Amino acid sequence: MEFYAENWLAIIAAAAAGFVVGGIWYGPVMGKKWMGAVGLTEEQIKSGNMGLIYGTTFILSLVASTTLAHLLTYFPDMSFGTVLMTAMGVALGFIIPAIGTNYLFSQKSRTLFLIDATYWLLFYAAMGAVHALL
Image 1 (tube, rainbow, N blue to C red):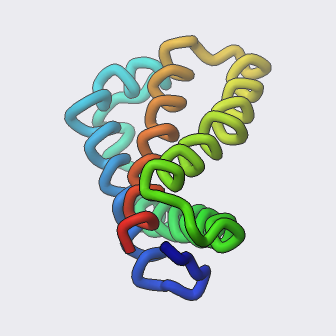
Image 2: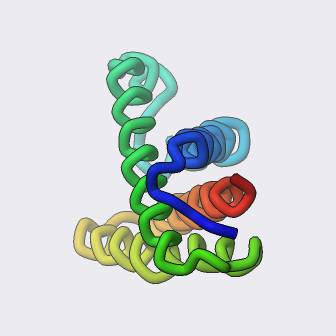
């Protein structure tokens, strides 16, 4: 299996997969618990500039997907499982410790950390699966 950072179909599809995971995770799965953990109401969330929020979030997902694709180009013969574990390793080794550090210093709750950390693990798992398949 070969990977190329120029595989824009994989990059866009993987970013979309991560984006969908976020919609499900912060919607029906953990939405209410997350809102409570960050101290927001549904009205406050709805009053935000949703076009800007979702648009910027998707662009950031594209950045993450492009970076993951670039990383995968260095190991072109990885199996599906290895790609998946590599992507999840990025979350476990870089993303989760970074947000954990921020949450400790900003005194955020353990609940919020666990919600967000699990999301990032699922986000990178979804992106890794798409990159492995395309």
